[in-house]
Amino acid sequence: MNPARRRRILLIALEAGVPLAVLAGWWVWSVGADSFYFPALPTILTTFADTWLFERVGSDVVPSLARLAAGFGIAVVAGVAIGTALGLSPVARRVAGPLVEFGRAVPPPALLPFGMLVLGVGDAMKVFVIAVVCLWPVLLNTVDGVRGVDPTMLDTARVYGIGGLERLRRIVWPSALPQVFAGMRTSLSLALILMVISEMVASTEGIGYFVLESQRSFAIAEMWSGIVLLGVLGYLLNAALALLERRVLRWHRAALASALR
Amino acid sequence: MLEVNGLSKTYGEGERTTRALAELSFTVAEGEFVCVVGPSGCGKTTLLRCMAGLLPPTSGSVSLRGHVVAGPPEQVGFVFQEYSRSLMPWLSVRDNIALPLRHKRLGKAERTRLVEEAVESVGLTGFIDHFPWELSGGMQQRVAIARALAYEPEILLMDEPFASVDAQTRADLEDLVLRVRKDYGVTVVFVTHDIDEAVYLGDRVVVLTQPPTTVQEVLAVNLPEPRDQVETKELPEFAHLRAHVFRAIKRRQELRPAT
Image 1 (cartoon, each protein chain N blue to C red):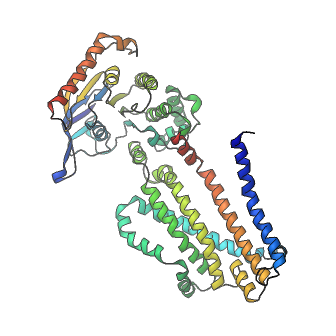
Image 2 (cartoon, helix red, strand yellow):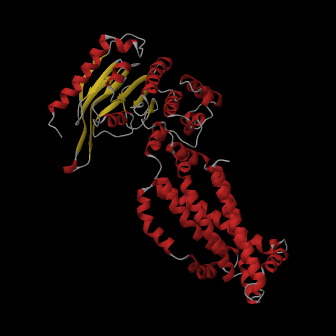
Image 3 (cartoon, chains in turn green, brown):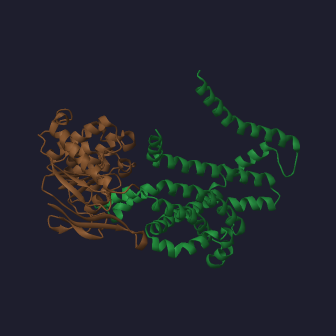
């Protein structure tokens, strides 16, 4: 076996082994600790299976994820639309600059009281808060991406009479897509955070609500099972987005690699 | 067919004014292959961009068949020096070439025919479904040429298209351009800083001066057709012509104070 191959196998073993070792350590320690705040890991896992597989999926997980998806989706569409307009027009950029800087500087949870006041404590308020927080990374990255389109490509479009929507769809958007994805990755993490916070502040269902309610009723194992679920969901959502990015931006990685060759 | 008339281009304002082109005039006849050669930094690219309607002139004009060029005319194809930045890496060779054809009112079959013919004429038939980044630099420039040909331009503007490929590839591409120019019956304006290339390819060579750039001399090249990389370059006339162009550029440089 050559050294490079051996090194790769070692790294993969470590990648899988370290989390398993941490898990095993937690298991052993928590079983022995007999702590009120840190229930034994087997207890948490049993509770997890009892609670989430699949009893509360329809009542808590689905509403949570639906709000996350709606807020994130609205933010991506609006962020790309507004970001494209600002990216294409220096005047619009100048005019909107202070507003954008202010908007993204407002800490998103500060919008919760306003959202509750105007939209009540229902889904609309939560989707609104998630959408607002997700908007900025997508918007700012889209502006950068659209501004960064290679001038030679734009000249090519002009010479060959490619204009309007055709120019956006075939040249500007594909070229900006790597940056749009970078914004989406940031936004997705923020979306999960705001999903939980909005459910803790004002809700009667959802995973965030469940975690807080469990804590208030001293159901510590249930609380932990909710935290574990949120971690797993965040991990899976990020992995799904990364997979999508790998497929959609295959040309981008390959072109970078060939430029370095 | 194409007329450059008193073309001037000035960059900047006031104290920092740079005159890139000054009262530059020449004409290109139907079906002609005109090479524009000049010292580096003499505004060759600026001239070609004005001719393509990508850059508005400060004064003077470019006319195509009697119409003043105000924006990129439909009859013009353009091959950029930076092939890797003018091809779209997210599109295959086929889609890159088809991209400019989408808004021409053509049937699907007609469009496919144009694309496949152009790919065949630049010798890339087996690579039609590859992506640009899977191809070498010379092959990428072939794709850019095929894209221009499929567009069926009446006039093809080429901006130092072979400046960044190796010598052997360059010779192949030069012969390719001579061949497709005949096949497609297209008028060509070819900008280069390479004197040999200009004399080898052109029916006429327009020699430019240092900035502020104007036309130093227009030279008819009466070398026998078809041109051949070995035989043509062996001819005493070829050596004579390239020496003549070289001296013309050199002489003007010596007249200027050293910078």
